[in-house]
Image (cartoon, rainbow, N blue to C red; front, side, top):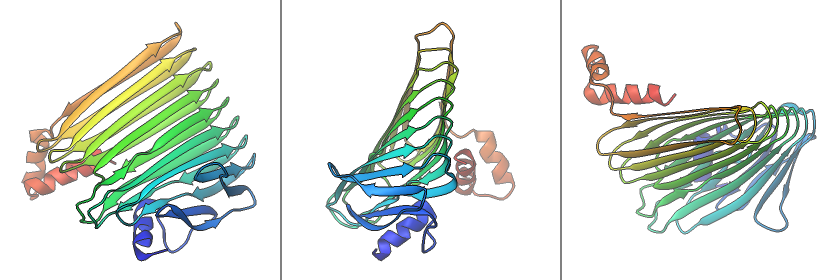
Length: 305
């Protein structure tokens, strides 16, 4: 691995010189390092670029890392990763992505991840995105996550965009069986001329299934963000979608939450709030000795936690 990859890994996947457990490190469209374990097997796809990750039933307390790094312009990286999680497993998946571009041509990563989570299994999915480099070429990250949860399965998705990504379209779809739960927490920061689009689409197909989508974002500079969510209740179920956004400078944010109740026992709720930082919040912090800029940053940091 080159030094840029190592620096990106520290930021997006808590790399400290190595990973414990199963891992696959992707660098500029190729595999830089890989390791499987007794319970988690990582193999290359034979029909398209990407991986198959198989987790044995009953596997508990293990982690699998699949970070991807692009370290120069002119790279258009596309990867398809499929996760097969056995019944009763309880694992953590860390899938950060960093794009560094110090050149004039575009650098792009598009990761398409599919999760097939067995009965009663639990997965925590952590994903951080970051763009770095002072080149004029765009840094683009377009993640796609497709989730299929069997009965009583749970997937927690914690996704963060740390900054520096010029354009991103983040697409997440889900299909939930009986008593399955999908919990998503998104945190997003844009600045300058950056553009970010979030699309959630979830079908609650099983009795007593549930989804909770919470997005918090900050749009600074002249950046633009759009948030769209569609929750379909096709059985007795619960669904909640929440979008909270702070506008700073000349940022633009749009939110379009949609609920579709195809069953009389579907209980669905959506919330959306967009606005600037409250003046009294700034004033209170400034009276404690902070500058206006410091006060704004403190409020934003707390909001995105």
